[in-house]
Image 1 (cartoon, rainbow, N blue to C red):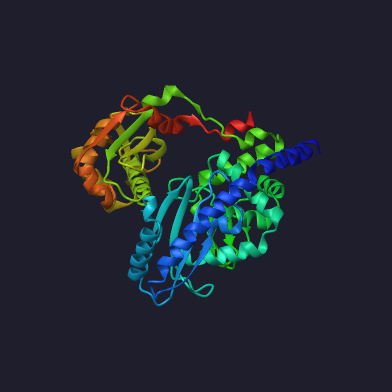
Image 2: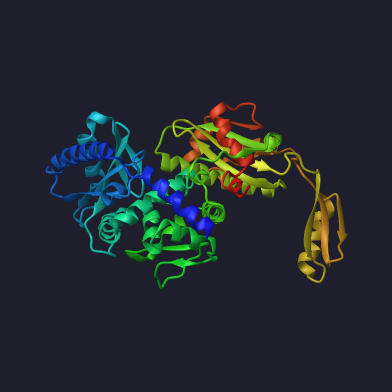
Length: 449
């Protein structure tokens, strides 16, 4: 009971810091109203546009004072072509935000973003459809807004803010592909489902694999399932990495066992510097493109190259992708060893399988170092590796197999040049910090000390 009492005190303390002050609320409203009027003026030029509305955490009043975006949704007639929707929404975004250096971001459709003071403004296109008749991913957003405005009580909205602060402090907040964490909307869904932050924490400490939060008739193959209340066929948890789901469950357990304000402050990871030389790094420069696109490409490249390293006989313990989103990207592989044995055994077919065993023997008698019959009835050959050094393996692989290992969208960047190296010799301080996560004890696990 003591820990429950302490938990309530901590939640009460955090609540006081998460609700935006009257001054901040006034300033945010002024920016929101100003942008709304600018966009409203622009949409008059286009008969395809039906209306505008605020979306996201600002509209639902679940925003955090330090990081609240303002989302404005432009609703298009549902018979508008995708091409027209994209072109018109970009024109509206650029024209209405021209004083604020607008730029394009990408989700399913491109949208226009700009910054006013410290506030990000997103002008997002969607179709004006009935519930369930989605033509694009953004079509659900106005329904999310309407549903949450109706469903969340004032107390629940503040509980959402506490949950968001908790997720941010533990670096698992944000739905973008770079993070693959918990979105603002999932935070709202979880609080609505469990009623309060404290109830959510208690439930997560006992959660079982494949638990379904919400109602659906469909089955999903993710570690946990969180159903979108306005679309029972949509699993919100599909966008969260298993690593981040694991972190969330573990820090919920740690917080329940030992409530403390430290759970709402950034925890530093603990680096094991002795493993720097176990890192194989591929660095390259790219032509600027949307952050969402470059992150998707480097994550795919990292995954493919990790598979190639494993096929080459190297054991990959962890991987990470990183980009400054301007021009540099890094693919990082933490290896059990960067140098491996020159020989390895290749298991062939069982000797009872006549054709395949005959073929295996005749081929390997010429090429292998040794061939023998194992105790498990399989014929085994001893092969010699071409590469025993991870650095030279990767250099040769990229030189000869660029199309196999690198997504199409990155191939022209790689053709202009890349570097493959071990350790941390060629890294700047800020990149070292990012990369060191791969050889660190995760900050969330340190809560168990």
